[in-house]
Image 1 (cartoon, rainbow, N blue to C red):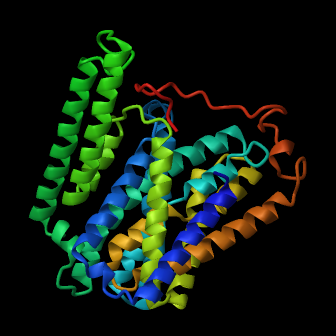
Image 2: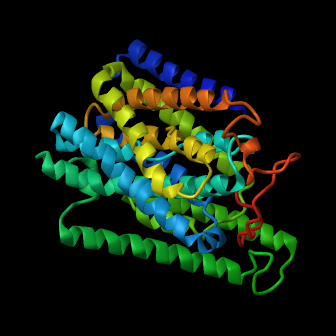
Image 3: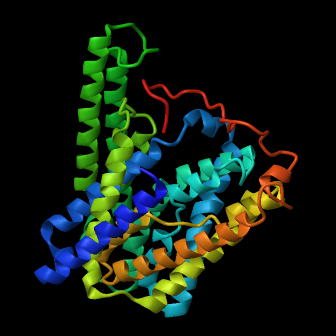
Length: 393
């Protein structure tokens, strides 16, 4: 599916949801018992999809870049956006909004990974950055929401019931997540010992390996559902780093399906309207924060690389799903985040178009740089294969 077709499908899903909400006079959807569970399942599916993109071999090879991406590229950026929102509107609940839009959507990564736009080194940095920001942002949102509810004087909601800001409860929650990840690791070790992997301890027949892979897929689905039910997102993120059965195109299709379902739900909730001013401020703050944090991360890169990465903020599935999760405890989140997503993506499109106007071989473009990729087919980064039956997405 092309970028244009994918965008059209997402917009259509949101419009269908809005039409259904108008026609059916749907009200109070976010308070329905199954709403948070559905939103949590969507969040878990997206989280597994993003953690599968992380190559542990690449992490070891570029540890410094990973640390910058996690600390400056995610945590500091989220803090900057949240700080602007709280200072502008004097409401502690707005802390969660800054965290919800701090990630970079994979569409931006794909768009900027063209050899005529950025160098191989810049594409590698962007790939690592985008791989880590989704899971880290999800975890930050989950835990910051409990803190924001306490500061705003909330009486506890759905997320507050799952996550508390009290030290003892946080410790118990951390232990539960660690136990979840440890259980997943033991299951994966058992599957490996049985011969799931081609380079495992002993060779088995292809049919046996295929059956073991289907068992691993079923266990992964069970882990996703359990994590969504008990809101063990940290444990699921850790499990996604190693529990990787062969899924083929299922990962991409399931992530796209989750995006369409999420935008449909977003359309249902948009029947209450949008909040333009906070949404505009949130969008501008996210773009400005990206400009700031890109400075240390892109240090040493050519000017054209720095410009493309500085204007690389774009939001999609993760921001949409996080808005759905937060709507129950923070009413109005969907209307603000939806506006911010439009603002951010429009700015991204305009900035990229202006940068592209320099043209191939123009001043500061990839073709004019000494470290640019040579003419011909795009050069792929050499990443050691993960210990699964398929290459990483």
